[in-house]
Length: 362
Image (cartoon, rainbow, N blue to C red; front, side, top):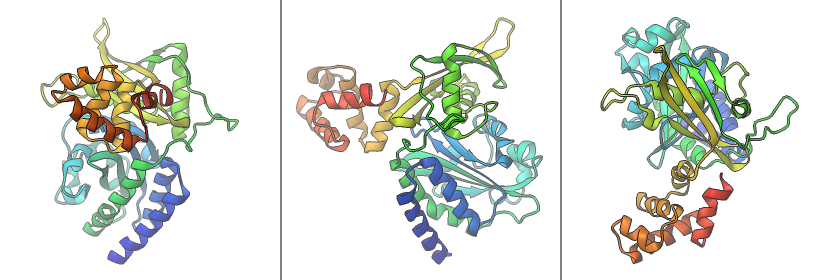
């Protein structure tokens, strides 16, 4: 087992040098894993480290058919091996057959989705770098195959840190969304606004919405009849009950998605109720706001929580004195944090730092 881990680790390292696109890297990782650990379905998802929601997935036909329902079950109610649970676990990987004491039918996800689709077991893992999630990995085996073993779980868990480190650093710019002619899809300048039913059926949309949906679908290489995964994720979160008070969890129904050319796309969903009592979802898609991008940049550049708070005040336009007062620190301490942020981001002044958010990425 240890020799297999060392060999696969070397191949993953070489992949990082050849594949600048996170999507291509995730696809290649699945191919490598399939050579040593057979599976019949897979999903490798990019994740917003701030909200834990999907920024796009690599799937196959077997998983794509059940993907929308898996989103529903992930954000509604308890079950075995939920991603939130695995992210906090000592070993962030687990197989359903083992976790359920070889009784997978105890899982609602298994009874209602996996088993009817012909799957007998599921291995899930969460990729984390510097304490922040950057990916979810799911592997599935048909009922005719033996379930995943403890060695399978150990193998995946051993490779997670290396895959996570790459995905955290990788640029999305090489993974461009294209139209049928092979040309990059431009991002609309206006915000796209559309209304979905509770089952995510499109009910109404403004003119810009079509362009945004086309760009998101192009980035994931999915068809025009499939709702992009980040949209599904924010909608599922908006519909899910808050664990604190049972209310709608709209506060977290947002995601920041890397896009072609170094931009970021902000997606938000809000739960609504029509006059006849039907649940609907209002979704907004636009170039991400600085407030949305800041958590992503803070994660990518390794800013501490205090440095992030200082940068946030600077972006808001506060003076050094005002920022220090709002954070209950001296101006000297604020300057120390600001200098550290400059060094980590490769900037030399407040103006350059603000440019990173207002001009370069939005």
